[in-house]
Image (tube, rainbow, N blue to C red):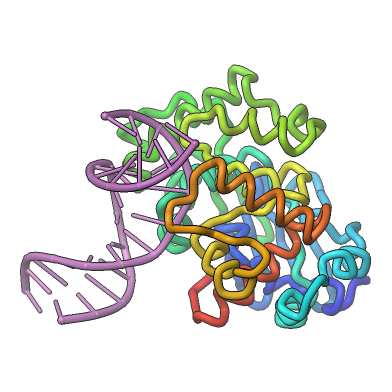
Length: 280
DNA sequence: CCAAGGCCTGAATG
DNA sequence: ACATTCAGGCCTT
């Protein structure tokens, strides 16, 4: 049995990685692909409407990872701020669509769009006497009309979602293969998809494709780097070109190491909480 | 290669 | 009450 020291369920869920989670009577329920997960913190128990996966990556040695990333007092503070925060191992298709839908939006809006997608296109299932709409399959989304997708609040992202789903259907995007590739090749493949840039690709790689060296650089992370790490990772001006993005990423991996993605998650969580930003 | 503008929605601000 | 501003990442020019 895991203690709250080794896994902090609240922090892990409320850290911007997932959107379709809700807490009912102290139990977290979340949509993960075609399954619903139910998680209790104390005593720790996770159950699934289908196959059980190590969603919270409890097989990762947190001690080893924290040793590896604790390079300075800033990360150490961030780690202490939400000790037991874990990267999550998400369903790749849901993660892919979620972050494509996330671009140029905010958590509240992303959440609404994704719930709409599940309601309109996903199967309704019952689990623990509660009803849920699970995430639709790629086939369904690839055949959806742009009008119906826009009806979910996706706006101009409707095209991205439809084409991204079609790329999975045509096997241009094959998540099992992407998992086996290295970071760079896997990322280049994802970035060929309409609507997938550097940041979205890194989120997909980190949260669902086992690339723990991915380090998504969104506006918040840039602010964090400017605030705490301006001496280490210099950022000249506002616009973040692909070239600059890659240069910063390289410096970051050299500094934080192969688990750089974990450091990103702790820093992001700390700064958003500091600014009292809402999660789910 | 880089910089600037447009896309879409809802919340925050005036 | 209503209008304006803002947040947010990617694509096109």
